Image 1: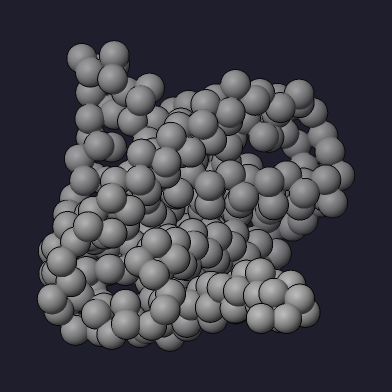
Image 2: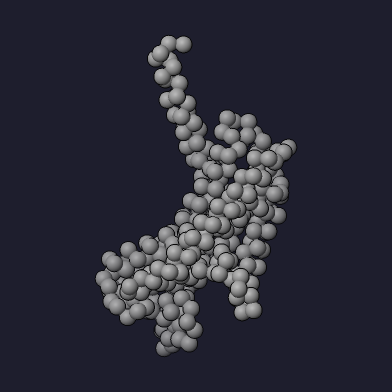
Length: 297
C-alpha cells in the first residue's frame, strides 16, 4: 500500500461511517413522520389548543372568567390570562397536554420504534446493512427525540395561531406581576417549548427500552403509556412523597417558572437533570438488551 493510500484509509472510513449514520437517521425520520399514526397524533395535539381557545372564548362571551377558582396549578393560572393575551393560550395548551396527551403520543412512537419493526419482520433486514445495532438504536432514539420537539412545537404553534385569531396580543404580564414586551414573551414561549420537549426525553428512553423487550408493537405502546399513567398517579399520592422527586413527571410543570422575573431555575434544572438521568439509565438498558438480543423476526 502506498503512502497516499494509507493516509486516505482513516479519512474514508469515518466519512463512510458518518454517511451511513446520516442516511439511517433520515430513514428513521421518514418512517416515523410518514405513518398515518403519527399524523393522527399530531392532529389530535393540534386540536387541543383549538378546543381550549374556543372554550375560553365562549366562557368570556357568557360573562364568565375562565380559570377562576382553578387552583394554583400552571394550567389554571395561564387560562385565566388567555382572554387578555392570546400568547397565554400557548402556555395553557402546553400545560394541558404535557400531563397526558404529549407523553402518550411519545409513548406510542417510542414503544413502536423497535417492537413494530420486529413485528413486521423488517428489523432483521435493517441489521443486514452495515449500520450496526448501536447506530440503529441511536438513530431510532434520535428520531423519537425529534418527534418530541415537533409534537411540542405543533401544540405551541397551533395555540399561538388560535390565540392570535380569538384574543388580543400585546405586552405580557408575567406570573410575578412584571410586564414584558410581546417579543420577549415570544422568546420565553420558545424557551418553554424547548423545556417541554426536553421533559419528554425520559418517556422516550423508557419507551425505547420497553420496545426492545418484545416483538409486539401494540404491547410495547400499551406498556409505555400504561407506565406513564401509573407513574403520574403515584406522583399525586401524598403518602408516597418520598419517592416523588425521583419520578420523571414530577417537575414537568416547572416550565411555568420561566414566566417569572427573575426566572426560578431550581426546579427547571432538577427536571432537566432528572430527564438526563432517565435517558442515560434506560438508554443504556435499551442498548444492552438490543445489542444482545437474538433477532429472529
